[in-house]
Amino acid sequence: MSKSYLAIPKGNILKMEQDLKKDQNIKYVILNDQLATLYVSDDFEEKNLNNIKSIAWWQRSTPMSSLIQITNNV
Image (cartoon, one colour):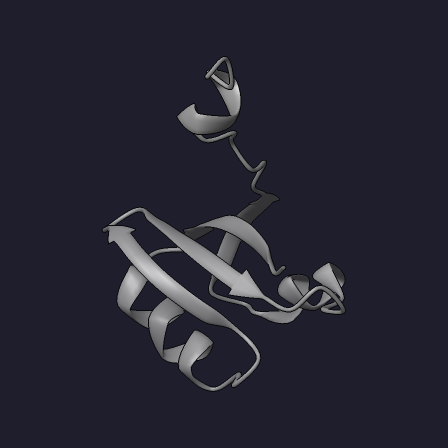
């Protein structure tokens, strides 16, 4: 299973996208002009996100349970 993070760009999200494209270990989805989701492997060192100058803020995402797991009363 991989880890995921939310990231807010410092300025323009297109600049952050350019920087993310340079790292083959980070997959991402741009959600809107102010937020992206980053996907990395389990062994990824999250402190590496601090080295991406175009990221103003990041936080590890918390997985949510699926409705099947919540309503497991079948």
